[in-house]
Image (tube, rainbow over all chains, first blue to last red; front, side):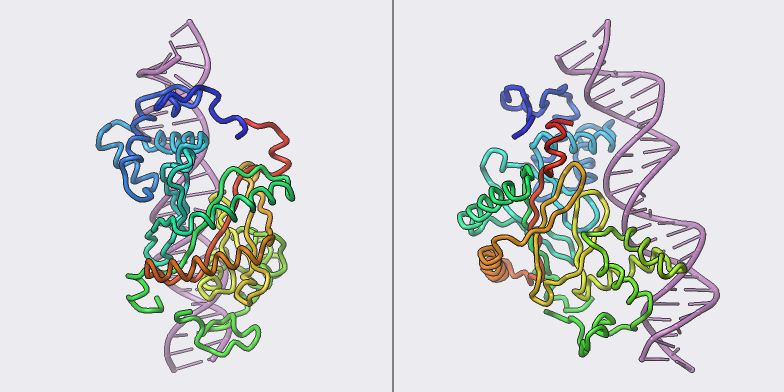
Length: 158
Length: 158
DNA sequence: TTAACTGCAAACACTTTGCATAGAT
DNA sequence: ATCTATGCAAAGTGTTTGCAGTTAA
């Protein structure tokens, strides 16, 4: 949208996003892309660490932030106080999805149902809100909260 | 939905939610209800403290959590690492709204546009997702992220 | 060559918890 | 009288930052 990368994104090089392409950065993206679900920063750290023992947690945080700014990955709020991440396939127009989050166990289910109707309403909303409030909308988040099947079965209160 | 209050909610008493109705709890809800926007836990604390000097921050956190579980207030994620709160007017079916959040300055704008279409799609989605995934959906969050007018004007990168 | 990146550890900010006391029912 | 809620301070947690050394460009 505004100043995205500014460089030709030839496959993987796009991750550099005008910055240096370092081994840790690649390893971090790689790790995230190999992980299922929505790992937390620390989980990504553990995974990267397995293949690159010397890596630091700070580097993971710094790169996740960088990758997020570059639009490569996306932050998911699972309501557990930690930041969770997932690849932003939506950047390619591909597998964008929304979330179904359990308030008890924190599990996150992705869903892509009603894609057509949702996308239609969403783009209508984005356009309208942009005009009305002057916001420059780049992103959205639609999540449903409640109890997952397992937790709901475990009894209603606490 | 599941085990909500279980007591007759005679106006304000409903806040007790089966628990003791204490002055701090009332003061905290009162403070939040008098504040505009989406104050953070600490902002609520400051406001309550003004009228009740002795109150503790922990009590504010404990009660915000309690009120949230009781469905009286709602947590808003402004992406700034702090928990923000607002009254859950939606509980009464009234002024439910969604958010327009600035990634730069963290400002949050409420909007209620396209209410009919949105609500229609949302309730359809909730029903469908409940059936398909077995989740017990109690709540949802729809937010658009980007730059507010002011921040967008201040330059595109950085 | 040089400026961004890294790893480490220390610093931070927000939130939660332990415990003795106060207070609602 | 009983048992939950409170206030304080101390402990956690997740995340950020300072800095000297490293490394991509």
